Amino acid sequence: MNWIGLYTIIRREMERTFRVVIQTIFSPLISATLFIFVFGSVVGSRIDEIGGVPYIVFVFPGILIMNVLTSAFSHSSSAIYFAKFIRSIEEMLVAPLSYFEIMLGNVLSAVVRALVIGIAIVGMGILFGAVSMHNFFLFFIYIIAIAVVFSLLGIITGLVAKSFEQLNILSTFIILPFSFLGGMFYTLDMLPETAQKIAVFNPFFYFVDGIRFAMVGIHDSNLFVGAILIGSLVVILGGIVWRIFYTGWRIRE
Amino acid sequence: MNNEAPQAGQAALEIQNLRKTYGKTVAVDDISLTLPRGGFLGLLGPNGAGKTTTIGCVVGVHKINGGSIKVFGHDVVHDYRDARKVVGIAPQEFNADFFGKVRKMLDYVAGYYGIPKKQRVERVDQLLEQFNLTKHKDKGFNELSGGLKRRAILARALVHDPDLLILDEPTAGVDVELRHELWSYLQQISKEGKTILLTSHYLDEVEMLANRFAFINDGKIIADGSKEKMLAGGKKLEEVYLELTGKKDAV
Image (cartoon, rainbow over all chains, first blue to last red; front, side, top):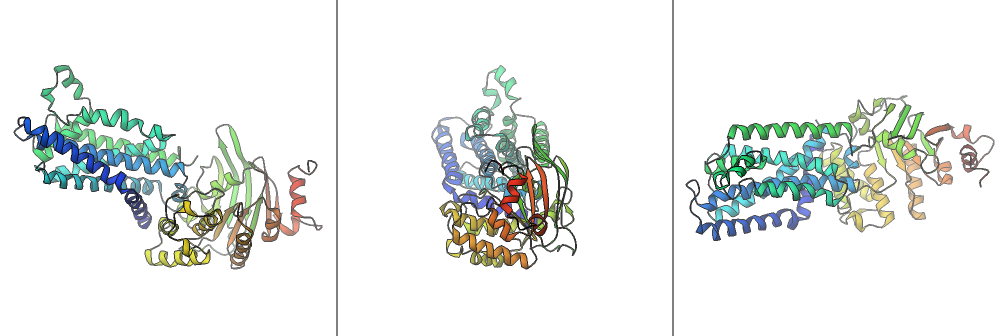
């Protein structure tokens, strides 16, 4: 294992992140703060408790996970796409780094960025009284696993995309709508019956619900199904990314 | 730096029946080439002949469709870590992070090669000084002039002190001063035992610097050998080139 090389990939990506700190850190933090303030404090103060907790506490896990997964996705997709676009990816390709190390470096740097965002949002949530913690270990595992899933998805998107517009297709048409429809702001029983049946096929529903259980202790979904889903996505997407690096598709052509 | 020094007598580069295709287009067609350790090879050919593709296959930027490449005995596919440790590449086109600072770029690339921090800092400072980049070290790559960019790319190729240095059109678009500096630097490191593969459309510089030539056209090696053999009878390299590439009558 080229540990220095692996650490360098992470270090470089983190420095790239902090080079554009307004875009990468402050923008999601401000967005999350507005969500917490508007939906939690302003609107939430007029809504009854849900599952025995104030609305702001109920809604916070969804806001948190949406920002964590968006950060992980944006980080890895833009890192790979940009490096491919300007061909600086060749600096890694000609170095004694394995496919696994390149993949791991990109995933870990995306996870670190997602964690930085997550910690900042939790800090902001504490100020608004929005944070509770039912099971910290589970919370940590969920956050990491979901960040890994979306960083892998970001790598695939960064490799597939042939333009900046294509880079945004997944986040615009999948991530954003599915997050909002994944129970961020409501419980399953608030939906019409047909919508409830459809909602269980939305993977984002399990992401939000798992984090909500870890933080608040209430859940709508079958947590076991959610855990299997997230674990399977890590393995399947990890396998796809490893295969892409191994074959050199869109990288070493 | 490279801890696995190549063994004496071992060829620096052995290309056997290399084939590289892009879809149905054959870019490199069954080429074989050997560069002895310490040799200075001028790889020549017209645009699109397959020079850059061949180099890309050697350094790992391109996947190989057939044949094999060994660098100091290390197969570039199966033993890629050891192979890449001993090769440095300065590509024809700038492939650096536009916004990254010069010093950082060298530091990161040295890190990719697994060089520990203390050695990395020393090596980067040494290269910045050597290529007159010290006062530009905190500038973004996109802020540099064309000549300074070329210097930075050359410094990057040398950051891990490779035994085989590959330079793809290193003097394209640079001023006379840098060209002369580069020539004397290449002559110096060649004397010190580095193996060099150079491509250039400036045949006079290749003739002056290299001690071996290989001519590639339409993806095939059409001739290769020592300078003495290729320029026998007092021929100029340009004359040989035009003869071999079939362009003599056109000139």
